[in-house]
Image (tube, rainbow, N blue to C red; front, side, top):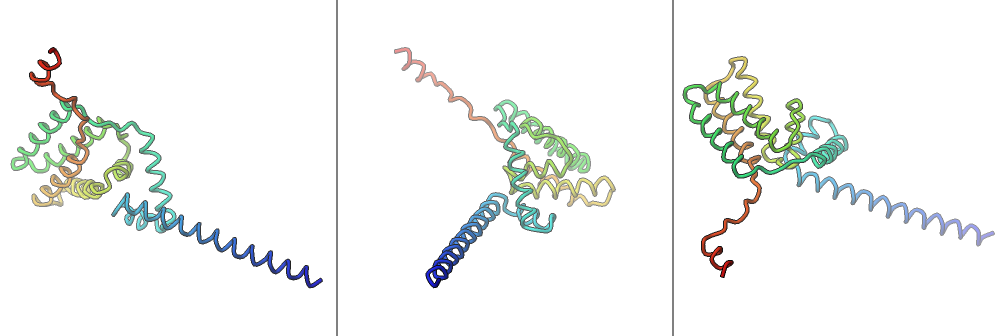
Amino acid sequence: MQTIDTQWILIGAVAVVGLSMALAAWFSYRRKQSKKLQDRFGPEYDRAIQDLGSRAKAETELKARTLRVESLEITALAQAEAVRFNVSWNGLQSRFVDDPRGVVVQADQLVRELMLKRGYPMRDFEHRAADISVDHPAVAENYRAAQAIALRSEQGAVSTEDLRKAVVHYRALFDELLEVKDAPPMVTQEARMAASA
C-alpha cells in the first residue's frame, strides 16, 4: 500500500516538474516573440498596445500586418522611375513658398503614387500606415504626423510652419520608400575591349 502511495507521489512530482518546465518554456517563448516584435516595429509596437489596449491584442495585430504585407508584391523602383519621382518631389518642394497648402496636398498625392507603384494597396489611411510600418516602422509615425497636419490644413487650422513640418514628414517617408532596384553594372569601354580580346 505504501509503495502505491510513493509511486503516486513520484508521478505527481514528475508531472508538476514537467508542467513547470513547459510553462517556463512557454513564457520564455512569449518574451522572445514580444522582444522580436518590439525590435522590428519600434515605436509602432507601443502605439499598437496603446491603440488596442493590451499587449496580446497588439502583438496579434502586428503579426497579422506582417503576414498581410508579406503576401503583397512590394517591388523596388527601376532607376528611371526613381529619377521621375525625385524630379516630381523637387518640383513640388520648389513651389512651397508660393503655395504651402497645395504642396502638402501634392506631397500626399506623390507619396500615395509612390506607394502604389511599389505595390502597396491604397486602402484607407490607417491601413496604408499599418502596411508601411511592417517594412518601414521608423517613418510610419512621420506619415501619421503629416496626415494629421494635412487634415487640419483642409480646415484652415494650421500655420505655414505646420505645413513645412508636414512636407518634412512626407519627405522622410518618401525617401524611405524610394528604394531602387540594383542597376546592372555599367560596362566600360575597357571592359568591352578586354572581353573582345
